[in-house]
Image (cartoon, rainbow, N blue to C red):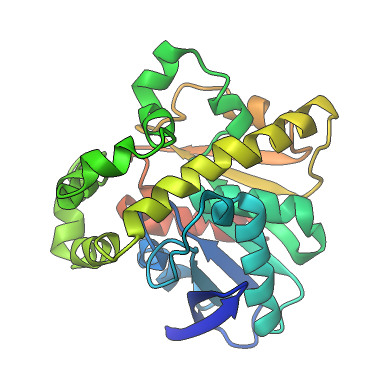
Amino acid sequence: MDSHYITVNSTKLHYVTGGKEDGPVCLLLHGFPQSWITWRNVIPYLEAHYKIIAVDLRGYGDSDKPEGIENYTNKIMAQDITEILAAQNVTTAYVVGHDRGARVARRLAYDHPELINRLALIEIMPMEYVYSLSAEEAAKKYWHWVFQVVPDLPETLISGKEEEYLKFLLSRGDGLFELLNSDGSWDKYLKSWKQPGAVKAALNDYRASYKFDLPEYQEKMKSADKLNIDTLLLWAENGNLSGLPVEDIWKKSINNVTGYELKNCGHYLLEETGEEVAQYILEFDK
């Protein structure tokens, strides 16, 4: 994969390209607390079919980590993506996002639907749904959505314990931490996580969603402002979405959805079952 940098709104962003140079574009957007390398087990199965663009979202990986909650809204992150696509002369793409990256993908679909010919959202529920859960429900699966929006306290508690916190987050899967350790990706994630401003940036990603993005999505829900892009939904049997009526909930905001639960894996299914994820992505584009 070839590395590139682009500066948008005084923020330097990192992304990589590879695959079939003259093929249709598949844009990959990672989640928290990772970087583009979360796709390393998926890309080998896609690169014969697509030109791959995999981004380090602002605040993550080798992209800049600007200060200020207002710099991490879904809207601003989606604007970043439009600049990257323009720099690569891309007018339409199959946009695939996992976790936080899927939230950026969703916002991109609202703001620039002309750029997206297919959309895939992996392991997420609508933001407005998550923040409507009871305290009991949130405590089981979405505790970090509450903890990480508290002002100042999270970074105070994480300071000096960055490695322990990251290990806890990336151990949510049967043998996942051992898998990350075995192929060297843990060291890369940890290096990025320990960069100056990285923890604060990731926390601000959640804070911006709660303060700025959530009210906008709640308004869209009230006005029945729905997406008309064909959308693939993937979730894990052992992830946060297991047992939920995923397709029914998403149909409230997207007209055309097709969903599948992947067996024997958890939230970080890209790491655990990359080939299967890739096959669903490919099949949906036929």
